[in-house]
Amino acid sequence: MTQIKARRIRHKRKPPKNKAESKITNHPATRLAKFKAKRTNLMRLGAESKKRASYQKLLWHRI
Image (cartoon, rainbow, N blue to C red):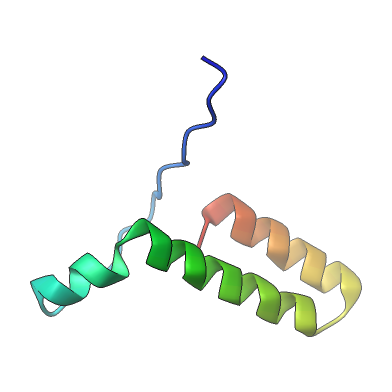
């Protein structure tokens, strides 16, 4: 059992307006893409230490 499990997201998301929308936005691939986009944006801007801190935060909270 050396499998790494996905960390549970603790904060609540606001409920989506419709079911179809929620299916898309809560899809793991979409969430991962969102995370990656955020990460690359962080890499692009700001001071090195600031970036590193917010990147760590992102990693821990996973969006």
